[in-house]
Length: 364
Image (cartoon, rainbow, N blue to C red; front, top):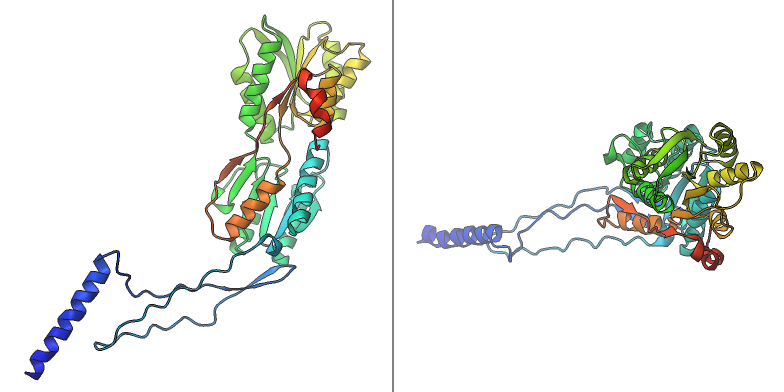
């Protein structure tokens, strides 16, 4: 009889374990997850690894197993963030506005921003990122000066468990090494520019293009989108790089005006800084506002001033105010929330008739 009395106990345990494994309403005993202990300070966040793994004590046949709830993860706040921001340069108004947006947002939210200016050098950006990794920042927000050559430094950040958010321009290489990209839909910007050019030249015409820096995705996609939407009766007579700055754009446009004297109906400039150089060359050549149409990309204050004065007929916005989006994404990533890997900034198209009223509201 003693042996028989054991049998029901064994059966009950087996059935209970079987139900726990199959029925989703009965939670099985699981090994608690090991969560690093996070010590927060006003400067940086230090992650201290656990010193031991919790021990699971097996339940006996006569005892009921007690489930220990998993520890609640510590929620990181904006004041706990330290963000590395190796800005590529400060060569124009758009880039200055992009920097201001990051600095102002960080100050408003109490975030420590580790800022540097790479002066247009990838080497300087990489050095800045390495310094940030050593400092133990939470997140790296990288506006890449060139599209390739980033895998090695991104791997260093990855191995240090520091997520990277790519800002503005996209990069080539291993996309598993960064968390997400926030920036403009550059192909769409080019398409919008082509559509505006079609409206300006409904009967067709001859145009010239001042493109951005060769090899940079903004230059490539703005050119590709433009050609995709441009009407067949409009001819691109010439396309040269103005390197995204007014000095080079002035030189290129000056050459165009001499080479194609009296033949240019319109100009497509890949950014406002080059549009400023184009207008300077037109003034030097004795042209009047609106005599040769201009479509530009950016929507900076200088671009709006050119709309108001009649030199530019359409502005395709490229919004540099990414600070809030970047910081919000950084916080979500660190708190384990799912984020979109591709996020576009909100952008539109502006014309002369609305520019005067909107000019005072432009932040860049």
